[in-house]
Length: 348
Image 1 (cartoon, one colour):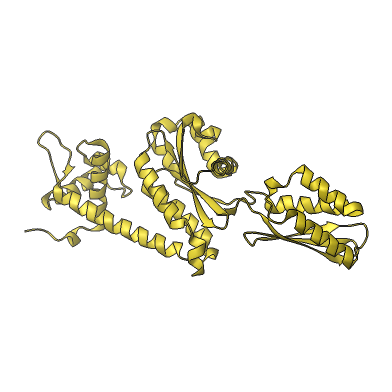
Image 2 (cartoon, rainbow, N blue to C red):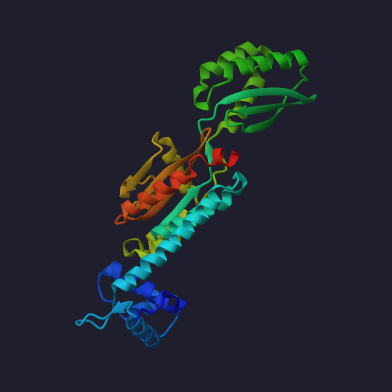
């Protein structure tokens, strides 16, 4: 008579899960000593042997004649797969629930994305918060604050508004401010930072005449407003997964690699390198191809997600060169599709 699945308590489920995962990884029968090291149950080998005997009696594992270890039975595989499917369905549901939240929940979403991705792949992961790229000037407004200051308001095509206070020697009358506003908007609207060259600035300063210094100050404000990667937020997870791979577990290598994840400055360089590539699909860096020095012994797989209106972010997975590329790329592809257009969905 078949024993109902419900008769497996949490401890038996964890031991069965460990047996199957270990057997899938090695192809070798699994003994109690291996399981005692593999699980977080802190059980003795004797206790694990008793649990394994129960699992064998229930038909979830079996013992090959030539070995003292156990291997999964068809019934064990079925339980594992059904359990895995339920778990993955739950994770997907959680992900979808998070993804459709309003944009103010973005930090929570991205932290969860990094965590789920690390758990799913068993590698280190990083996800950047969305930032604005290739922004163009939509509108510039100069207005008088007091005798010594004017306020420059810059509106970008992504509807981001930047304010900058500019110090002036003398107060400007309304007519002068109007002329400067017309001059700046006529000469700069629709341009990105990269499209504003020295000739453009020189022409504007000549047209501004005695107020050319104000044009210079406005250009400085524009450079700050349009700078890419400003206050880049990077969320990481699974960094200790790196310790599981012997080829990366060299003391010096691992120290440098973990520092990279902790300080995040070099991760920002990786993100900027990803953005400099015009492709927004999946990119793979193997060994020396990695733009970050501490990752030269790793493989790095990244994808750019787009939230519309020039808003982009990066998802990245860092692991050994022998990583499961197919699984990693599938994971990134699915996440990219879920994150693409999230701003548009949140407005519906």
